[in-house]
Length: 326
Ligand SMILES: NC(=O)c1ccc[n+]([C@@H]2O[C@H](COP(=O)([O-])OP(=O)(O)OC[C@H]3O[C@@H](n4cnc5c(N)ncnc54)[C@H](OP(=O)(O)O)[C@@H]3O)[C@@H](O)[C@H]2O)c1
Image (cartoon, rainbow, N blue to C red):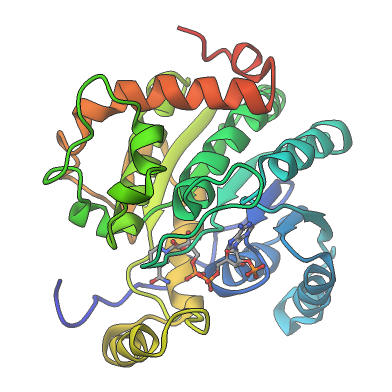
């Protein structure tokens, strides 16, 4: 990890999302909120803030609409606030159903919500390991359910929709090389066994995101939906939920090398405007990461099968509707 990160150049002035509809998950703070502001300033027509707390979402909406650059737009964006809690599969299913019934078009799905922890923590509904559920599985289920809408929108507009996952280059520090999931063992069961938990589960969860986005891209026509993932580098984030020593280490790291949320979120927006060459790839900042080669490849097909089965159980019929049955 280099001590200093390269400068991330500003987004081009000409970049516009006029006429487009977008969902940003985790839009109430951090990178998601900063990306939502970029989109609002760049003429997005409809912006859906997918958030855990509606009241905070309303505050974010008001702040976006009050932004001086947004206010100079000839037409103000339509901003809608929807509830989504990725810890709860029932929330994922009901969010996706609402979008499918209430939203006519979707050009952009930015799956940003997520986070890290060094501790074993479980979710309230399914008692799965939290990072596995929030960073990976719920996002995967959501994108299966929303893929038909992204596709249909592209067919209408004649230009590809974008499905972008916020990944992390820490995936290269995943623990699967050293501690592989044994052949014939369920990856899901392995990751949800507290005895197998490792402090580096965050990089593991981001490797799953990358493998899944790659598998999905291989089965999706890029002329309809460009599927990519993006890492914004190290970006200042709220660490208040971490223990004091983790918090302090990160605050020092942020001070030395962290990007601001405005700067880091440029990479997210770059992925939403990127071309076919990014399909199935991960962007590090604005550049396709060339070294994905065989990282985690031995897990990819197993992960695909287990994830489709989970998607089918949470949102029955979604796999066939998304044309993902092999
Ligand atoms: N910061 C970095 O250096 C960095 C680097 C690479 C990748 N990333 C990735 O970038 C994304 C955003 O990170 P950030 O730095 O902006 O973190 P952050 O400031 O902690 O924001 C995380 C966002 O995710 C939402 N979220 C967390 N758990 C959720 C859940 N169960 N359901 C729905 N939403 C949930 C939070 O919602 P609430 O507001 O309700 O808490 C918040 O809006 C994450 O996926 C992270 O892994 C970050």
